[in-house]
Amino acid sequence: MRYVKPGTGKQRLLNKRETRNVRTQQRWDWKKLSVRILRWFMVISCALLLVGGVLLLVKIIVDSDHFTVQTIEVSGNKRLVSQDVIELSDIRQGVSTFDLDLEIIGQKLAENDWIRSAYIMRKLPQGIVIDISEREAVFIINLDYLYYVDSEGEIFKVLRGGDTLDYPLVTGIDRQQLLDDPQQATERLQYIAKMIIDLQQRKFFNTKWVAQINIDPKGGYTLYTDPLGVPIRVGTSDFSGKIDRLEQVFAEIKQRLPLLEYIDLSVPDEVIVKTVGHSEQID
Image 1: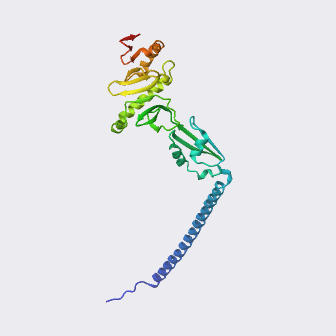
Image 2: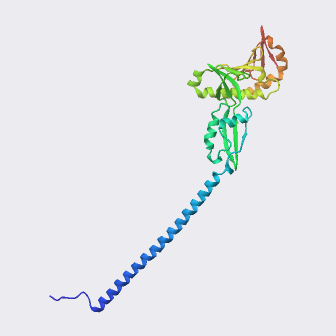
Image 3: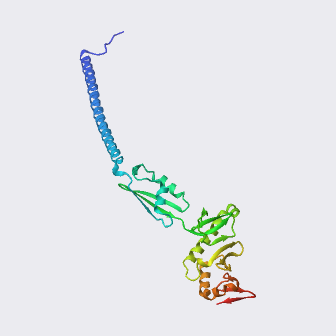
């Protein structure tokens, strides 16, 4: 067997050079990597210092007296007094405007019976604006207790001492009906609200002539006059058109109210009045 060496002298020299070049290249790669890491470290450190400085500056400005609440404006209120709304909001002068949670303040204000919604905004540097939307009571409903109902047919407040009773009273619907069929009950309350809003805009026959409205599932809606409680039957639809007809002859009818048993508007294009002993149609 013949033994063969791995390589000649020339080949070994070349191998040593290649090995030295590889080691040298490896040393230079580590140096470049260290430089890059140092550069990135400096960039990140500068960025963090800059952000920290900005945050510190913002905190100093926010905590300064320049952004403390000095004025509180209230808008949208008709029934509620502005000072009462401010007290309900629990916003105090001198507090930092940025310490206020505006959403929570709005929710707190909306807990008041007369406030439908509240929008709170900052008026920098030292102001707060409270814009509220109030409910408008249009009638009263008897559900074991007396409640106000607003212009959208929503029951929103139980009457307490000092609350005015100067609204039409709605009867013919009870608490159990609200629980059994809330959708139908709500639709009826919304229809009555529209009826009353229609009457509020009229000149001759308006809400001052209406003491009560009764809901009859079969016969529709009946208004009772104030005074004397004369029934006015208006059916279930076209309320505005029927009141138009009534207004045309109401100057004559109101003189005869003490003698009337009822007024019937449920017949299309007619106004029927029933007096003691007989009925007649008024054109």
